[in-house]
Image 1 (cartoon, helix red, strand yellow):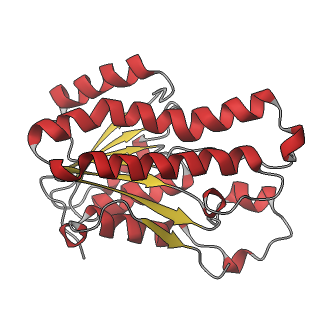
Image 2: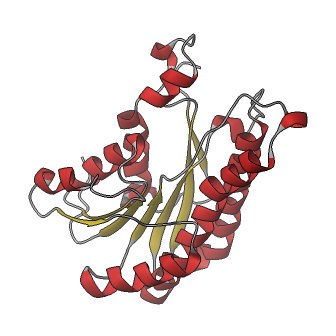
Length: 238
């Protein structure tokens, strides 16, 4: 449906459940994908999925919470692969089970690092080059909980709310630079971990990673060049 031939796309959290679907979607659409993940050896699977003009480059053991590490990685990608046109930041973290009055310092800091600091550092690494080259796309992954606080998940809700506000701020800052910045806002993504965390939920109402990917691919395409600062809901039947 879309053709990203000649485009270099950075996907953070590439070995995660959503990240894998996003990588596959871009590879099936002729994109050149740089997959980033903090784990080792989880990205080799994608090298066999290349089709047509698609190509995949694996960068593992990446710490998105380390700004200097990210800046160095951006230079490495620019040298080894080329100029990045798009950033899809799927990295994030989820935590529930603590009421607001009982949120631990560890939970609070972890949610902020995984959901907010990761975006700040990814943007610092790749947006300046987009500005220099005259355009690009940044796509973040929000959450319904970032719009309406989730019971017993206050730290997660606050982190996703911060991510959405940062997305909106970047959209305003970069709109004259031909860089569109948007967020996809899933309800609950159907993943093994989410099923484990919420065993009594109705999984059929959730959205699949592939359904979220469909929206990401649209936002990354030229069809969405007039859209920036949006938070696109992908709630399934919740």
